Image (cartoon, rainbow, N blue to C red; front, top):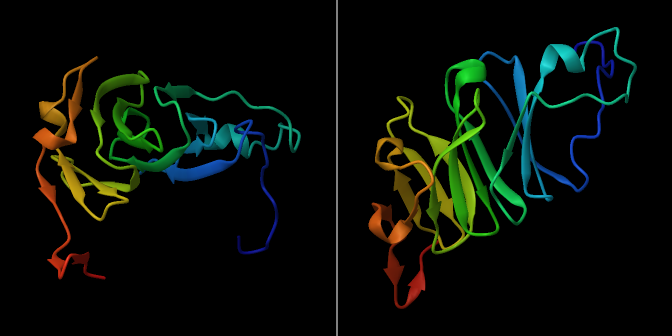
Length: 167
């Protein structure tokens, strides 16, 4: 960045890239797309001087479980072994183990999520919904191959004044 030199370009998705996030060690970049996929790429491989600019590079992991565009993407701690949460316009959230690309569990949301973030200790994941509510997911309460409804999870909703949500 200091000298303004383009380091890498690559075709990450066949539709628009909607989200980007690095792992905490900056060795992996995750891309979420309008094609409903999330890919993880090795940063060193992307910026390698041996790789021709614009040439293809294979993802090191593929997270597939959504049917509509990715709306949020958050990465926990642990580098390539981190947990990842993804949300989609299909009103689902998935929690993943990045190293195995395994879906830890999923949540059916009452409204599409527009953002996601892990608590600093990763004991919870917070999902900001388009409705203004925030859903709190505890990863320890999810089961592999099971989907829970956000109706059974803690939720913080915006205050309502005279029948309208406050700003």
